[in-house]
Each structure stands twice: as structure tokens, then as C-alpha cells.
Image (tube, rainbow, N blue to C red; front, side, top):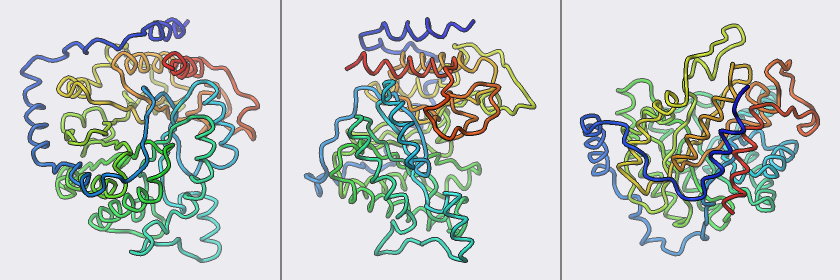
Length: 396
């Protein structure tokens, strides 16, 4: 039997901030990342430079002391998802990370456009948010519900105009970079007075498999320019940043730039080992992986935290396919690590794909339920998450 309840109880009993994380590396291993971080810090222009020009811009934001919530996509936030949000909030979840993306990534809307022989809207200098008008309406409709439930919103830039998933427009890297800056300038202006949107995640997975391409994109410069665009409108919102070329992985923290802005959170995704968390039904894998081994995969994050003791860390995505053996134990071990290290976390995912949803059993046929709240299965994975979300009540 999985010792899920005991694992989470041990975490719940900690009422004081955790002690400084124990060293994981010798000075020999610490020296190189330290030099790399110092070099990046020097190279990156201070993102707070725009603060003096827009000192009164934006409403005050007060993030929860710790985020323990869910991760989703804007296209999923239709009316049926309101039940998902209500359920998660009632279990204690206090944050939702929303991957914001093109309207045309909604399969139904894409089919509608293609049937009519139409193209999706493209951004213009006058309206850089034209490709997102439907999704902006969805976002505007969900914000009052989030306010009512006290679920804070983290808005992340995911698949934007010209990305590889854009069915209508292909853009060069330079054009995509320029659009990211314009996107954040427009978004930050639109929502600068809404306190429920607490943070902007500058880019989901700023990954580039080709190291030469990663250098050409000059991510650190693009990151700084995106932050300046936001700060020109809003000095109070929090900023969430990842590193490149390994921005979605813990290893990216070895190259993570230190942003000179008082409201910055650093992020990564946790799906290690990938072959286990993403395995198919035809290739069931049960690796010899205990909690210590899982924690070693996050070594670069721990070292970054040791070099920057006040840094706030968000695990923006983590999850495991529902039929993976011992998946509940993997979740329990992962959350225990996050809690001990003092990291925020948003789980991927509930109310979207049944393959990842903890309200479905491992042997469920995988057909999505017509009503989320009817037929919820109290799986071991769901119990782990509910115990994790419940920690929010203890901190209030």
C-alpha cells in the first residue's frame, strides 16, 4: 500500500519555514554555475529600470504566501470548467496558471474557420491582441469567478502568433520575439488594475533544442525587453521567468539569469523521468526511482536557491500519466520535496485530458465525462493532491 497519507501528513505538520536547504554539491560543482549566473546577471539589463517612469502604474498585488494550485489552458476555460475550478478551490487550491494562446488553437473554432474558408486574425500595430479576442473574452469571464473563490491567476504566454502550432501564420524568430514584447505591453495595459491577475509568466517553455538557435534568439535580452514592456504599464504585478535553452527543465537553472526586480519568481516544470511520466499503455515502465533520486533531478534548482536565498520558486507544471505504476507515490514524493524546499506548485492537470486527470482511475476507458463533478473517482493520485491543496488552509 502506498504511504500517501503519512507522506503528506509529515509535510502538514511543519508550521515553521523550512531550514536552509542542505548542500547537495561540493564547491567544485558549485563554482561553474556561480560563474555562469554572475555573467548572465551582469549581461542582463535591470528589468526595474522602467520603474521610475511608471511608478504609480498598476494596482497592488498580494500573492498568497504559497501557491498550491492547478495548471490549465485558456481554451479549456469554458463554462463546464467552472465546475473544475469550483471543485479545486473547495479542496483548497488557491492559484490557477493559465497558458494563454491563440484563438485558433481551439479545435472547434479552427474547424469553423476552415469550413468558412477564413483565416484567423493577425496582430496589427493598432491591435496586437487581435489573434486572441475570443480567449480574452473567456479570460474576462473567468476572472470574477476567481475573485469569488480567491483563486489567484498566473497568466502565461504559451502558443502565440506565428508559433509552430499556428495553423495560419508562420513567422520568423525575430517576428515572434517582437510579438512577444508587444503582447505583454498590451496585456499589461489591459489588466494593470485587476488584482486577481497576480503574475505574468513571460514564456512557457522557452526551449531551443539547437544551441546555436538558442544563442541567436538572445533569450536574456528578449526576457529583459518583455519585462520592460510590462513594467511600462504595471509596476506591481509579479513576473515569472524561466531560462533558455532548457527553460522547462530543472537543469535550466544552471543558466538562470538573476533579475534585478523585487517582484520576480523563477520557474521550471517537473516531469522527471519523462519516459515514466509520459509512458504509453503499450510500454509500461516502473523505474527504480525513490524520493532522493527524484530530488537529485532538481539539483540545479536547489543550487540556484542556495546562491539566491530569497528567490521564490514555482513548479509551474508537474504531473504523471494516470496508468503509470506507483503514480500516486511519485506525486506524493514530488509534492513533499516542493513543500520542504518552500516552492510553489500548480498541478498539470485536472478537467482537461482524462489521461492526466487524477479523477479518472488507471484502467478507466478514458472517455471524458459529460459533467466533471458526476463520477469523480477518489483515486490515490487525487487524495495526494487534495492533501496538498489542503495545506493552504493551514497557512491561512
